[in-house]
Length: 394
Image (cartoon, rainbow, N blue to C red; front, side, top):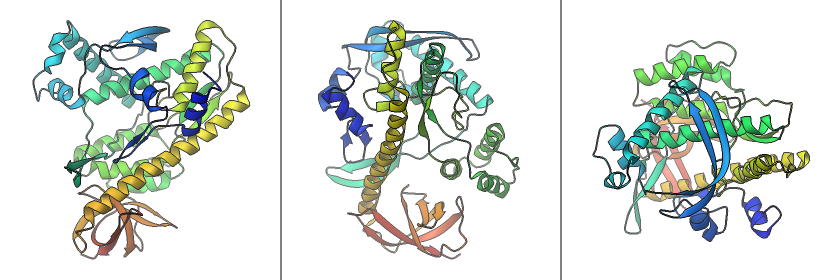
């Protein structure tokens, strides 16, 4: 409930923070891990976004309503993805629920159609490198890449579609909405340079479809190093932010997803913007007054953007400390790396393996984002998460 003690708690936190060491939930733990979580064989209150799609992924119609849902099977991304991709057997639990196998295959087919349609409209093909820790007992032994797969894409593509339907619904009811936007990139000139370095031409003005064509060709030409290019492009695109779209007005949209109507609505137990959106939806569904003043939403949008940026900094800081701990015994070793940041605060690189970031303390003159180089580990500081390298000249 708005203005309750729990709401104040969630608004203060704004988002759950996910670190290698520990998860810090936005809501109190009992709510986060139980009452608002889709636990196996448990009835849960939910808002359902029911969508009718054409065979090519176009949204034909949608309906939004409140319901009680029950999770009938506990599945794991990797085992489901291996089955869908033909690399493993069907997870045994799927066979215990009548019709679930075909239902998941249908979801997979639709998700791929949704993804293909978005990319046709200019959504960007990007592969970021996310890592998870490998422990033996209490000792950190490695950081492994957590790759995307078809099972994860089902969730991702359905969430994007549901977020779009939610935004359209609030517009139709003349309600304000809490949008997530990634603005047209200001660093387009450097993105053009990245393309030119790889033998491709991009137009002088930002063009998502042209950038997507370049990314697809770059991935086909060099799939091994494509995540490095993706990381460079993401840095140059800039971070997203929350904005308020008022009735009769429009926002810039999400450049990377090539969608105009986009807001976060599917995770109200871990993101405060989603909780705001669900309150707006519930009010719109029953014809109640808008639960927020416009000025109040503007303040919350700024607050949520700032706190989400702060949460990401914490997550990166803990990841850097874990990486420093992993590398502290390897002072003097050399690694292949890529430049991921260059500015007044320094030049930053990411190793190819293990996939960790650090600062280039010497040899950075003239280096640009996306440039490959060889580096030597100079020092680490686990407490501060510092990892310093110097450039090794060929």
